[in-house]
Image 1 (cartoon, rainbow, N blue to C red):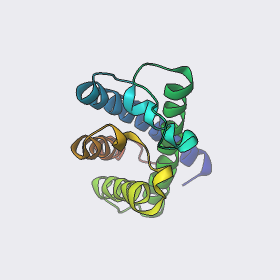
Image 2: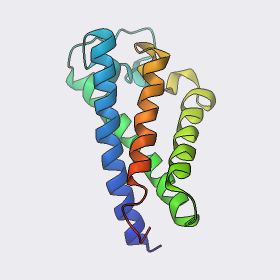
Image 3: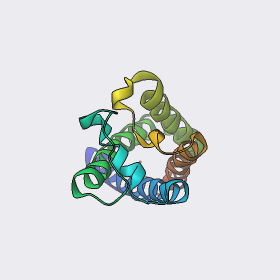
Length: 150
């Protein structure tokens, strides 16, 4: 795979993951807390710690930081996913999506210290968090066959 093809695929995949997972977080947050911003705001715990309530209203500091950190993570997972797809061309797109999403969940909740978890789990149920990772996996799987050069 050419570097330009890889970079293009990462940008496309990262953009789609950012859009779909941010929407999923906002929908789950609205459903479970009454505010679409509460879960995104909780990502700020990385900076402020768990002792501070990050609120449920839109906040340029908390909400935009949450979206930015989430987007950065999605572009990172997109890079890993596209590398996996590029080095293992025979890999089924669904298997690659499951592998990437599983790695993301394991890193997010079993490897990093609690201070650096996504934070959404602080206000969302385990079921909602699993559903958000499901959206990530489905997005990756649906993108899997889009580019024959990858």
